[in-house]
Image (cartoon, rainbow, N blue to C red; front, side, top):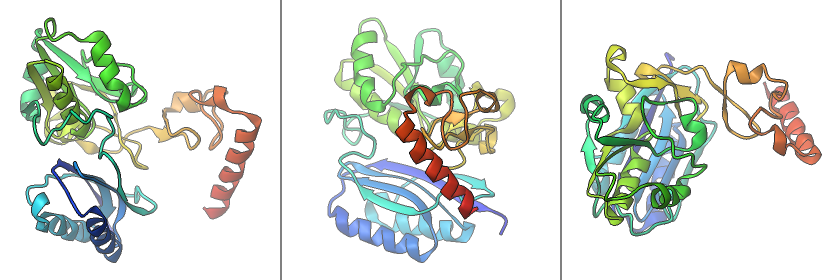
Length: 293
């Protein structure tokens, strides 16, 4: 096998009968050897799946056969190693957790910007560019000139907006995130707060890295992804980061050279929270991983 195909997708659309849909998706994916995660909520679907190229094509056709997902868009990439260990299809209150029900992208959303038009927008000095991802994601890569809100979870974004942004001062705001889902919901939230001109990158960073040539790219660094690839680069090529198996943070070769790093136990970002009890648990898990190799 040449490798595995990976697809990411989401759509804000009103869904009902979620348990029945969950069962159908579980059955299809299990039948075709698909692994990964799908989240379902009354507000829509959000997923990342991996499988053989043939199985992924069949799964794309299957998803689009569901009337609500007929126009579902997919971002594709390839990897030599299966990035997921199991399949999960879960029902959640939200497909991306903001905790503000008034932010409903199916009713009102900002202006989509195609990847090929993104550079011109963010180079406009009148536009405030905001990275809506979490702090640990921003640290390994972002667009030049983008503001880092310094959040540890997307739930904190509304607080950042209320403390740092003003509709009367910030007339044009452009936002981006990994795959487009967070900045789409963030744009819906900003519109409820009185902001008038709100843009967001269609398809997110992943679509930008896939479609914009390296020589034209304004992206700097790597993009964190929520699977065992950890990070990707221009053209969605595999990145250079690994993941701390204790806290889930992306770690570089420099981080691994730190005295705070111990494989499977701790890294510079979580060593301060490493209690003796947690160390014992992590050590047992690391020993189990070693025996399973």
